[in-house]
Length: 263
Image (cartoon, rainbow, N blue to C red; front, side, top):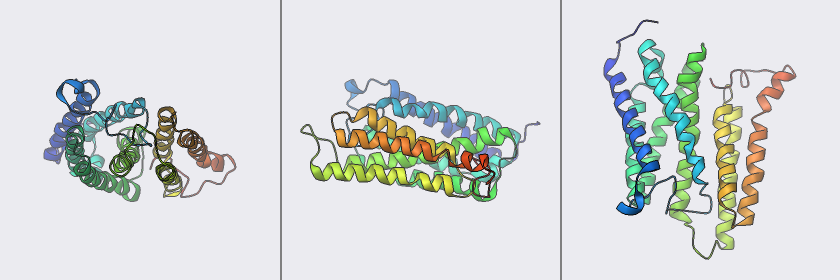
């Protein structure tokens, strides 16, 4: 494949914002937060009763690897520009703003920034679903897969941030109301797996992100048995539901909704 310099401004911008996003997440992971008074999403002071274990956030590692592949892949195909355009730039900028606001303790403003980031990522995600099919393995790995993961994960971050604002954790543990609210929140997140599996060609990768989050909540919320075991049950249910496209294929019932699993 020959290098293509079409739309080079957006391609260069994608590289710059990717490096910025990567640097921000690396600092959030390894920075000395206790000394400077800032807060990391990986081990946060802004906690709720649906905050997952810190290891859950290391899904960023896989996402960064795939997005790094995308910013290289974009120089060999016009598909990335056609599907992504400048929206990855917008998503990365808003994501960086969210991270800065979160680490400085402005959780309400961070929530608004995350809404904007979610909008930009969703635009890319649904454009890929509507306009582009994964014709090669490179299309799958470096275009569809990173945004399947990104779309599901940024939705999870939105819920985590929302509950950090509306239902923060307290030393005495949750009231009955907060327990019910947290379980309802987990149920809402889990229910979106239906959209990931049933919409268009089906998105197993996005659905598995939701299962990963549920298992993270299960690991973290050991002191609240109702939430702890609910998260485990929902995680198993979500993981099991991702098998639906494979089961349909096994019995010869592949349809337009269950054909490709990423795009």
